[in-house]
Image (cartoon, rainbow, N blue to C red; front, side):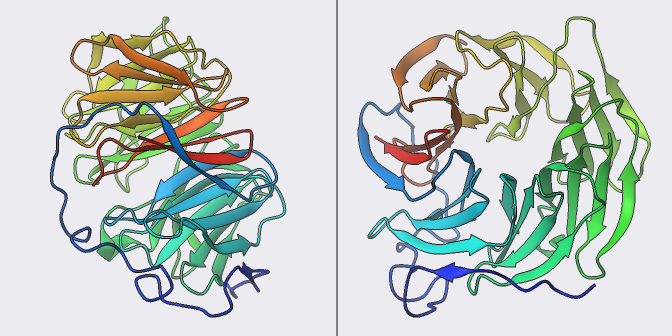
Length: 344
């Protein structure tokens, strides 16, 4: 497969390296270390990144250092923003024709994957902005999840409209596996147990657990009371994952072993029905956060499952919230008002 030509634009005259000059250098001590400091819930809005012309669907930290923020928007553009220095836009990546649904860095951050309603998954060079390859099975991909290990970063799995989770090898551009048991569109793909297993959720209101690379379900999770779960986040302990359930609640399951439902771990109060709102965790795992359909940002105590704080964050849906791994009182949110905000 021949790499596509990138319609990219740069907001700076030169092309610095990701960890080089012109504000791309990560702060001292932020690489290779993650000190677990007691986190606290933010109280005030301290900065806004603006530049997208339509709603922002997804944001991601640069791996390890978290000194850059990658954002994907309904305006079909992807941008990378400086978090630590000037807090400006460093790159605008233009290659999709429709809204960007999901983005994810590879383990080292030198590349990232994006998927869009234009039915394409694209692999980008983070530094140059070039599209390395484009992949498509002519179905809309709702999520793209790279393998978490650096030695396997050429492997990614896309959850697709055609009821399948499709595994690709980016080196050859070929589909190497299809996980085909769901009865509706696959919304999430999550690696668990040191990438030995994957968890998929679907509009069919079921959760399936698979052995990685083997298209046979090893655990069916399907109960009459269950609702669709369009978003999943793994707890920092990696013992649990939290899912945004479409009955206006966040539900929790074990992220290994028997993948048991945790009935006592349920977080309520927000309005999420109809939206794939991303759940966030503080680095120490003490706090859970989530946006909602009204633009509010909610914080719950993980142990007590009680709401701790709520405030208005965006005009319109607050679709994602990320806790900074090295500054545990800071949270970044994005919304369908086209803004990315920093809270402290």
